[in-house]
Structures are given as C-alpha cells and as structure tokens.
Length: 144
Image (cartoon, rainbow, N blue to C red):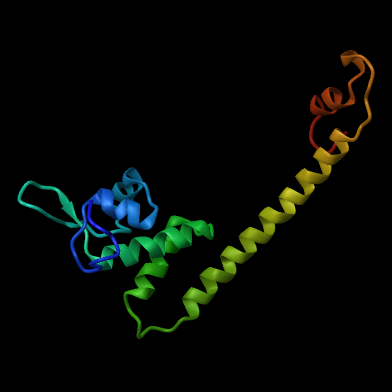
C-alpha cells in the first residue's frame, strides 16, 4: 500500500481516501449520493479515484460532522467555501445556530443527569416491590 503522505496530489482509491480521512467507505459513498462530495473520476476499470480536492472536502465534511452540523448546514458551508469572495456572514450564522443547538442539548443533558442522579441516590435497599428507581421509571417524566 502506498504511503498516503508521500504524494498528496496522487489519485487515491476509496479505501485510501477512507484511511487518510478517517471516514468509512459507505459514508464516503453516501456523501457522493447526496451531493456533498462530487462524483470522482474513474479508472478504465470503473474504480473511483479521488484527488487532493476530495481529500480536503471530505476532511471539511468530517470536521463539520464532528461539530454536529446537520447535512444541510454542511451543504451551505461547502457552497460558501467554494466561493471565497462571498461574505462570511452566513457561515457565522450557521455556526451560531449550531452553538445554540449544542447549548440546548447540554441543557437537556443536565436535566437528564439530575434526574438520573436522583434515581441513583434514592437509597432504596428494600425489596424490588418498594424500589424507588422502578417506581419512578413507571411515572411520566416530571411526576416523580
């Protein structure tokens, strides 16, 4: 197998692209199907070949996914990155929206943590018939 660092502009097979970017092969194919990653060139035997632009684009997509951006936001960010003369305002708005979504998830997780903390520290040592954890789980949320 070639050294993936030795020739950054050399065409790569899908497995090499996967190894280089940390994105699984089925995910790469999915990104092609939904248009986030352009259809690659093909060899005479119809094998996909990816260039340095595909590596950069897939790295961008992977990082955006790690930050939790939804696919449509990534599509917009890629569109912006393809037009470097445009204003950064839309990118800032998308980042702010993602930050708000993360803050909301954190608040939900903190509420979840508090409820689980209360369940875990209920101190029930009696029989299962009197178990506070099981009793609380049987009640609608917020009723315990």
